[in-house]
Length: 82
Image (tube, rainbow, N blue to C red):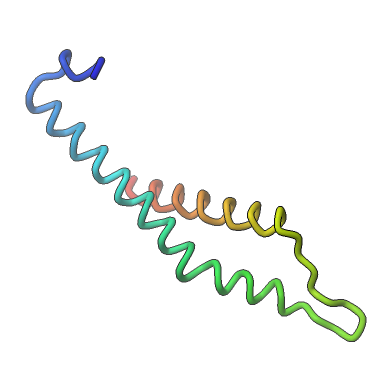
């Protein structure tokens, strides 16, 4: 609301398209990470089992991993636009 009055009409449409594409790509990256990448990452990490080693993950570590993967893939999708 602060910047909008200072923009020309063609600049407003460009900013609107930029903001729309930014949000769409970031949400697309999060969806890709949640539905496709995260199940494979968790399956790989839990798959490290052996006769002595059992996979043990705490809830804080799980949330940290999920947050890191989702934000990272959201940013990767953002930079893919450039």
